[in-house]
Length: 157
Image 1 (cartoon, rainbow, N blue to C red):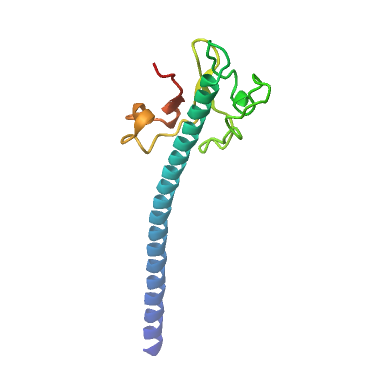
Image 2 (image 1 turned 135 degrees about the vertical axis):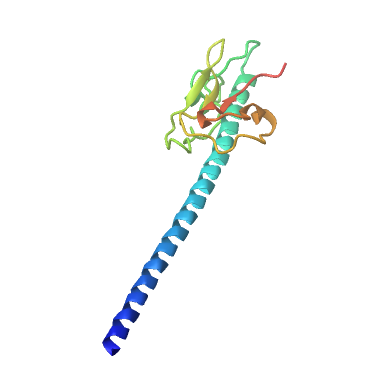
């Protein structure tokens, strides 16, 4: 009789342990999902920041063009070292890494008169943020893909 009680107790302990493992697994899966979503939001904020830096640098290159005819940079590398002046100017310190692709490769938007007037990520990931954009990013409202977030410099006027 004592042996039967011992076996029954060991069986309940085993079932309790299995239940605990299942509950821990479910909790970890939920935490991983939350962490993944927060990481994606963080990378989207980083993409917005980098896009603004590119837009600003392209604008500086354009507005500081010597002479009357304004020009967009011929390449992104021209933003690192503008050789049109006796002392070269820098608008960016580096070509930023795309937070979604992990590379320095960016899609570019060609200006009608030549040169690069904007950049966008080459990722095909869906956007987490699709509303509540501010300022020059309001045209991102409703964009389903992050690659559709195009950071373009347009001169005022």
